[in-house]
Length: 230
Image (cartoon, rainbow, N blue to C red; front, side, top):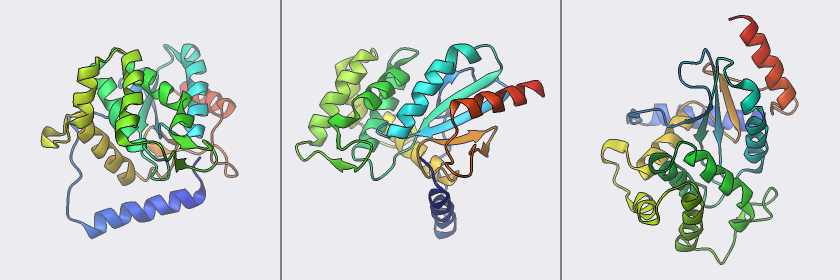
C-alpha cells in the first residue's frame, strides 16, 4: 500500500536515476501493461502498478475483477503493469513469469498467472502480508518449478515457459526477462514507489490523504464523474 513516504522515496530515486546517469531507459516496443478492462482507445485510462506477491494488490485485483462486468463498454481502460518491490522475495522472478505467460499464453494468460501468484503468496513468503522473509527451503529452481504450474494453468507449454525464464538476452528487449527488467525501470521513472500504485489519464491518483488507497466506492464515484464529462 503506498504511503507519503513511499511517494517521496520514489521521487528521490527517479531524480537520482536521471541526474546521476546519462543512460536512456530503453524505449519499449509496446506497452508492458495488460488490459483487464477496455483498451488503449478508451477515453479514460487507469493504470495500476502491482507486485505479484503484494497482499494489497491482491485485494485491488479482486475489486477490479468484480467491477469488470459493470464497466464493460463504459469507455474505461484499466491496464495492469508489474512492479517489483525489493522487500518481496522472488517478485522479479514472478514478473518474468508473468511476461512469459502474457507473450505465450491465451488472451487472459497474464491475469490467470498473476492471480495464481496472489493466491499462493504464502508458498513463497513467510507471514505473507506481514513480514516478508523468503522461505529458507526455496531456491530459484524450486520457485520457477512452482511458477511453471501457474503458467501451465494459463496455457503456456512447459518448454516454452522455461525458455522464457532462462533467456536473459536484452537484445531487442522482447524476451520476458528484458520486458520485466525494463518495465521496472519505466515504473521507477514515473515515480511508482509501491503496490498498488495508480495513474488516471497519466496523473498519479490517491483517493484519500489518510490511507492513499482508493477503494471501490471511490473508484466508482470517480469514474462516473469522468464519464459524465465525456
